[in-house]
Length: 76
Image 1 (tube, rainbow, N blue to C red):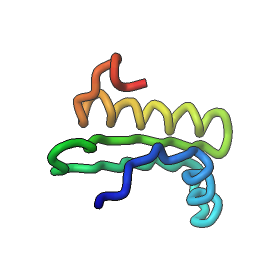
Image 2: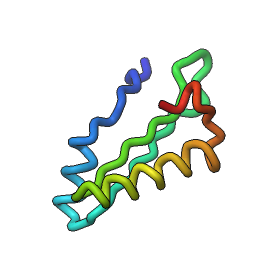
Image 3: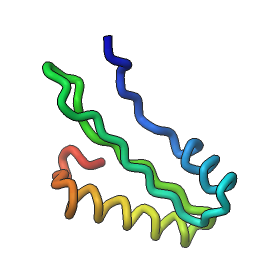
């Protein structure tokens, strides 16, 4: 039996940033090849300040929409 996927909370990205000393963290998680479902992708971003948060979110959006091919309907 496969472990169900769960959204990765921002608090997990925050812990990574604080532990490793980064201003911005972008997490990409993927489940591939499961037949039948579940499969899918997840993106979580974190920024230490409001400005860093905005930059991390823009990076996450770029990766979701330009690299991974998400659409606005499924990319929120």
